[in-house]
Amino acid sequence: MEHRSDAPGPKGRAFSNRGEYGTRTSVLVIFCIFLSVFSPVSSVVSQTSEVWQVVVIEPELIGQVPHDESAFTQGLEIHSGKFYESTGLYGESSVRIVNMETGQIETQYNLSDDYFAEGLTIWNNSIIQLTWKENIAFIYDTDSLQQIGNFSYQGEGWGVCNFDESGLWFSDGSGHLKYSNNSTVSFTNSLEVLVGGGPSERWNELECIDTNEHILANKWFDDSIYLIQISNGYVCQKVDFSSIREEFESESSGVLNGIAQDPETGNYWVTGKNWSNYYEVKIDFSNLSTNCQINSSSVPPVDCLDCEEENQIGIVYATILLALIWLTYTSISKRQTEKPPIISKDEQEGGEDV
Image 1: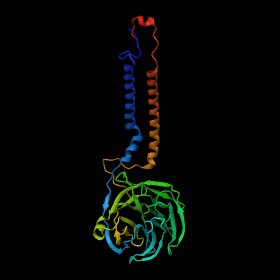
Image 2 (image 1 turned 120 degrees about the horizontal axis):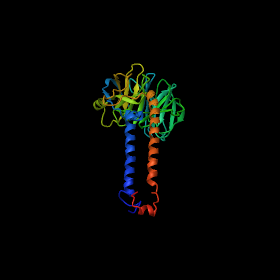
Image 3 (image 1 turned 90 degrees about the vertical axis):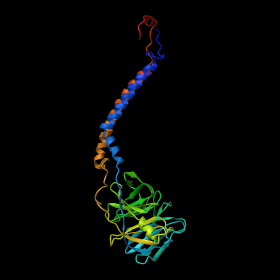
Image 4 (image 1 turned 30 degrees about the horizontal axis):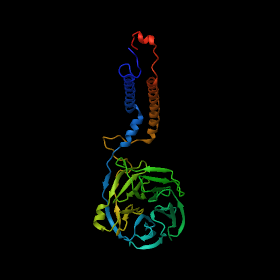
């Protein structure tokens, strides 16, 4: 029987390829099963799929003060018993001081038409006001609103706040908040905000509240404000202002924008773009010292102090297993690509199948 290395059937390459392919596939399947069961890497990855319920809180309305309906509000602060407000739009941007009892504008500084103003915060007894796409923040005197300086930053500017002047938190409309530990604004940290276990974008106005562990934020085109834990980015609770808007605001009112905590009372003030009022509300956040309540069907929260060690162990396991697979694959591939041995004419005529 003539031996032909390219012939189909039991003696040909086609049969041999199927066997070798099956062996290689079996080894890969075994590897994947072993890795998924025993490797800590898989357990760490699975913990990113946590799911939790965001608790919805209804605010208690305490009072209201008239708001300039022409103001396209971008940021709100309370300092020395006054509202400090930033308004936006090209050609209409300003920073202003407003009487908290009457809603009357006491002092106002108008930006040039080249700037679209965004959020503001009180920093080192001065005002920092962001701009949208101009990559510059202006610094003002808190009493006169005289412009006393500026600094640049990368990306868009949406919202800004700080905890006791220890550092600045920024939003840029994305799903992350950025942190700078000084006013030169070199971002040193980025925090992904997670709602119900998944990413969420359009974070806008920020208010660093007095717990020093949470940031209140609103989202563009959303009449709620969200409580963000800065330790992990989790949103566990949100406050729904839709009922207040429906009762007191008109169709011409824009979206909610403007959050300020009153240091004297602990209550919060909110308003919006072209809203007719500032609203003072009481909000009863619960269990601020605990993480979100994870659904029982999901994996418990990751403790990042422990997961670093697990990651290292998982990487070692994966490296060893990948090396074994590569050696096996190389051996199989080598056999597959080797030419069959040359068989002499005498061996072929001898009748022995090879």
